[in-house]
Length: 183
Image: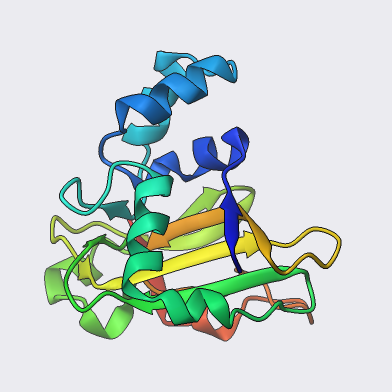
C-alpha cells in the first residue's frame, strides 16, 4: 500500500479516540462542514483514547505507524470484505482502551457491572476509575475497486480489536461473555 486517503467523514468518526485535535485537521473538518461544537462533542465522547503525546489526529497516527512499521504496509492483505485490518504493537503505551476482561476486575468493580443499551444492543459495562493503558493500535482501511495500492481510512483506535457484538451465525459472540465496556 503506497497511499492512504483520509475522507473527512472517516476522520470525524475517529475523533472519539482522541483527547485533542491538531488545528490543521480541525480546519479541514470546518471546510467539510463540521462545526466546533460537533468536533468537540466527538473528542469528549467515551471511548478508547490516544494520548496527546502520541498523536492529535488520525493522520499523525498513520504517519507514525508507517514510520515504525513500513513493511506492514507494503505487505498488507485485503480481507474478503474489502478491508485491510492492521494491528500494531507500538512497544510503548500510546493510549487507553475501554474494554476489559472480566477476570481483571477488582471485587468492588464487579459490583458495578450492569447492562446498557449501546447502538441498539444490550452490552455489559463496568465502572472503574482505572486507566487501562495499551501499546496496541488498530488501523482499518477500505480498498476500492481492488486497488491495493490505495487505502481509505475506515477506523483507527488504541486497544485490542474486538469482534462484533453478534456473530454471523447469530447470538452474542463468545468474546462478549467475558469482556465488558468501561463506562
